[in-house]
Amino acid sequence: MDEITRRLIEFWRGTQGAEGPVPLHAPVFEGREWDYVKDCLDTGWVSSVGAYVDRFEAMLAEITGVRHAVAVVNGTAALEICLHLAGVKPGDQVVMPSLTFIATANAASHLGATCRFVDIEERTLGLDPARLDEHLIAAKGQPIAAVVAMHTFGHPVDLDGVAAVCARHGVPLIEDAAESLGSSYHGQHTGHHGRLAALSFNGNKIVTTGGGGAILTNDAELAKRAKHLTTTAKVPHPYRFDHDEVGWNYRLPNLNAALGCAQLEVLDEYVARKRRLGDHYARVFADLPGVRLMLENPGTTVNYWLHALLLDQPDPARVERVIQEAGAAGIQCRPVWTPMHQLPMYGDCPRGPLPVTQSIAARLINIPSSPVAS
Image 1 (cartoon, rainbow, N blue to C red):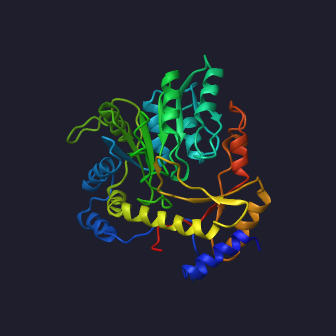
Image 2 (tube, rainbow, N blue to C red):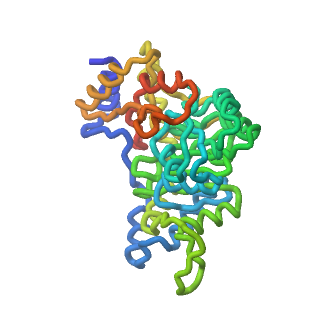
Image 3 (cartoon, helix red, strand yellow):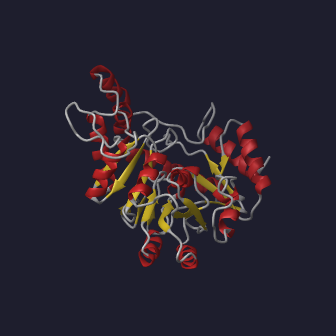
């Protein structure tokens, strides 16, 4: 048995006393979820209009410090609308990391745009500003309409560096903050540096609405447009059904928003728990050669959505072995996503050299990260 596996089993079965399956990231419901959802059922306000939607958006704006939040059905929808509002149209190109969840690339593809892949920094697991600058210089004259920077596993990308490169080249920056609710960069919550940002509230996120997402922006006009487009571009009227452009039916139901309101009320506690779990993991693996825990960088505060172990050297066979051994013991681990440039539908997309991306893909193991009390 691999020593990584042995230590994981010892920690979860011994120190933590877990008896059943240990999931990678399970939702936790310890607040007023039952009360708020029951209120929706009792009042009949279960669909895409209701007080909890408004409350959820207001809470998100307050927590993130971004002026406007628009709730939608999932993170992919949020990204798609962000890109559309940034001006992305068929035939355009969108720059992003290859090491990301498929939604980042799909959102651009749904708009008829082509993805361009740039390498990441190992210290952040996010876009490397230097590589981004080189890529944009080399691609001068191409119809590049946006750059998407993803905060991988909750670790903020080098936002100052990426934003400066985008400004220098006149390209809008969109933050894929799907995994970083509760993370901050130099005292500001993620989502402030981009023209728009996208959040996700999938069942495996630190806060869940069952399924859901949100668009963040400090621009009042963009927020108004986001709300209009995601509600089928319906012209406000007491009873008429008139629409003034092609829109999307991406509205978050009140029932889901109610769940999200209860979850947001305990977000700080969940972040604190995940950070304490990280402290435990740091002790568990501190003296194990050849492996290290992914830790936050100076100037950042990380929600540790998913904790990650990094092998010193690429070893996909060992990554697979640990995942299988841990799984056999009821402890769920996983590899990082297959890089986008290795997928059949994105294999022909323009890209720069991706040595760090390919190295990380062969070295990273995500380990259990649920916000349980520890």
